[in-house]
Image (cartoon, rainbow, N blue to C red; front, side, top):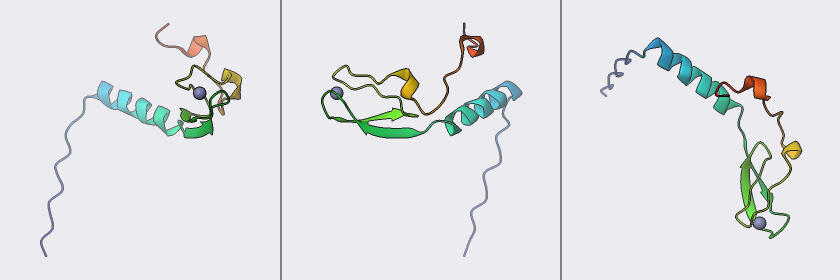
Length: 77
Ligand SMILES: [Zn+2]
């Protein structure tokens, strides 16, 4: 039996590594959840309990399973 050699790790610039780590941490906190639209009954998927249906229904932000970030935490603002 022959073993394939592991590919050599590609050097990643520090900034890209930090961005990737931040993205991974963000994604780790996201959970895909599913519910039934309260207007039309279609099964809709959302993130952390927040949903938007094609019929226009959205649930209230306060029904989400996680706390939303504040404006102070928005790095793009
Ligand atoms: Zn709907």
